[in-house]
Amino acid sequence: MRRLIVRPLPPVLFASPARHTSSTSQVSTINAADKRQGPQADDSTIKRPPYYLESGCGLFAKRPSRPFPPPFLSPPSQSFSDPLSTHHRSRDRRPSVNGQPIRGLTNGDDAVLMAENFIGTNDGVGQWSTRPNGHAGLWSRLILHFWAIEAERDTAFVEGRSEPRPVDYLQRAFEETVAATSSPNDWSGTTTACAALLHSSDSTPQRPSLYVTNLGDSQVLVLRPHDREVLYKTSEQWHWFDCPRQLGTNSPDTPKQNAVMDVVEIQEGDVVLAMSDGVIDNLWEHEVVKNVLDSLEAWDPKEKSGDSSVAKMDFVARKLVKAARVIAEDPFAESPFMERAVDEGLAMEGGKNASSYSSRANFLTEIQASSTTSVSSPPYVDDGIRDSLPNLSTQQQAIADRFHLLK
Image 1: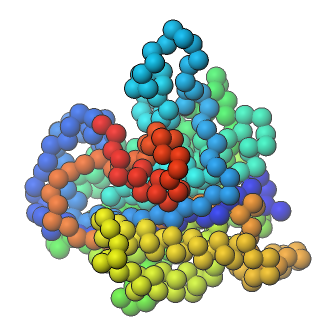
Image 2 (image 1 turned 90 degrees about the vertical axis):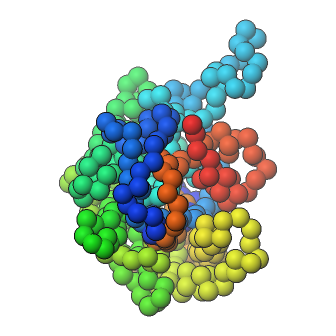
């Protein structure tokens, strides 16, 4: 059995690079709230990057996400002396750390985050929920939150003056998570980490590159639909079968020693998938590629509402998660996980059931071009929205979350 892992079905993050058609010399002022969330630069203006990611996600969790514990999420007071207004800070249900709302979205024990130049999925080890003070969902979300913030704090990278250093960002994010979950809080957990950071070269014309960082058994896959070709995919990192490398309590792994970073040359229209093992343990690579390509071809923007590009990515991501879920719940299906188990001498058949893995976040991103010239900080998910919309499906909540910016 996999050590310290009890997982629901996979989420999928999809992204595609896009190009801003406006001149890179144009700048836009960021308001004070955005500046707190974004790069800590002396100047109040930054350049709009020439490329960005249009992302969609598909999510599924067998069990609901656990609430974050105090001090990350303070439950409403039951005292009659407290204000009755739900807008008062004592009633604020949004999780926060160091005075900032925690970015991203929690799905089961996993965490996902989407921004214009960053997508990531962290696979939390769900078995921590059976241990005292164990909370893998908190660990996976905090590491992703601090990871995105560290990338924004590198003003040289944000302003295009240097290449990003995602492994260093992850190392600092890991250290900040350790500090945030240490005494007097003392919350335990472990998580894998997988993300892709978009960067544009200084050459003329500017060319986009993807800085992919992975630690564990999640996967980033880069696909070129026009050529029906896989450009790149990460390799899984295991200590032994079903026990991946992971960051957190009692784990010997650290980003500096164990994270692997690769640079992938991409172009507008390429598709980037950030998948947890709930997808790649149930679908072979050729099945993932075929599913994505078929979904892209089947997409009809005339039949959909809202932003067509974003809706397309959501549509493709949901189709991929659905296909993985079918295999996971079939006790007689053939799957990559079954094949690996047989190679290890274990008697097993069927898909990797959602109760035994935590792949919940898969992003589909497409590199796109846009004439937009405004600048905004990367969006992050407000859990207050999820809590206030209990009747929405998980997918609808994710869409609502992604387009809500806290100011």
